[in-house]
Image 1 (tube, rainbow, N blue to C red):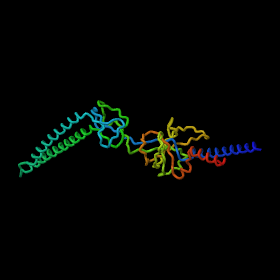
Image 2: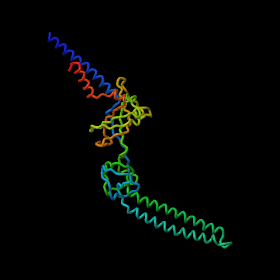
Image 3: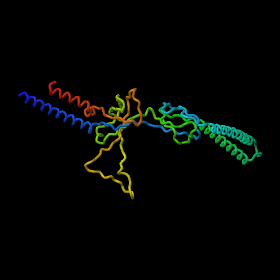
Image 4: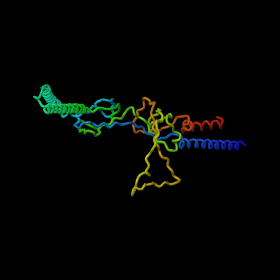
Length: 315
């Protein structure tokens, strides 16, 4: 009699474990297939590509790789010798044109004061025109002087934002070309996270919903909110092929892969011990009430399984 009872208990426990395991499997399946979360997340940041406005040999580099800089800080300096010469030449040109202008204006004013027919109207008009031309040349010389001063100031290349110098490779002696980017600054105030959600989960996502971001390598989460959802992604079927005809990839009717859509998350709470690095990976989870109902981790499922087993066995 006793062995039969033990067999019934063992059978009941086995069935109970199978039932609970089936429930956990269903919960986990829903969690991995339908809940609004994704492991395919990435930290992003704005990067400012700084290029010099004038060309010349780099004389001094004032920053180091990964250094934090403020807006207005001098990053590097270009040899100013040629620009100082241009400034001195422009100053001399202004002085020359100023003297000529004063002379032309004095000539015109003397003839304007002569009464009667001693000076013809045509001659007065001629001296008036010469004075106006002298004034135009003086204004142009002043503009060139201002440009020369600006070019000299531009030999000191400054940061336009607060951020971190990234991948610095320049050295004194390198040649800087006007308009060619040679230093990058990561904007320290621009970090956000892109969560690449499957299209089947977009219906659960809403602008302003709270989000939990788990960065790889850190235990503490980062919190934020959904800022925007991308309204378009690239499609290979839009590419043109021979004779301008569309190139459409064949798709098996029984295999349909869900597309990934970027969802932008604005970060709000960043723990002090976390260093944000653009390009690193993250897990993005919606933590709204709806998200909590659909978000059960493997640990939670195993804890529920243990509670159910203890309840069934009376322990």
